[in-house]
Image (tube, rainbow, N blue to C red; front, side):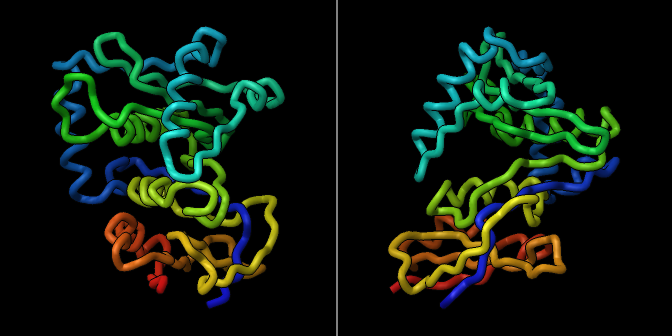
Length: 246
């Protein structure tokens, strides 16, 4: 099957006063429980401008996490930050004063824009229902509303997933209620799914007159389908059709 697609897209989520709405019913109860119990485990949040001191511990953690994934793509963050004509901040998550990761973001009049983020998969000793990544996603949205932002922007990704980054990255962004749309800059390509020898998630180009991406294809084998089935569970965001590889 031939699929017409854009090489890049952006993710964003419109912000509402009811933060929980985009997280789904299962995650809502887990997040509420985690927020109530966070103080019992000395879970802390700090927001500071990025600095050399911050990058000393963040970059090794970021690079190790990225390199552990399928199709790793380590971004030269310090170089990007120095070239940017904007101020970047870090939302740091700590457990008992030990950093578990951080979200690097910037602000405009309308957007809370996440540039890079990385977190430990698990808490050090805390027994909380959600992991550090999902916990801080809620905190970011809460902070964005406090800053009177209209959108939480989850950055720009390369299309297709599975060829450039993990399909799990798209699953996470779907899971927090974010939707993909056309990026400002992209190239149009065509891919033949019959020639793929690896699992992939491909967002179809929505056409010249549309902005939001509404259709995607999960190309997978029946043996590995279970790893990526989560991306098919958000048809209100993007309808995902499964294509099986021989």
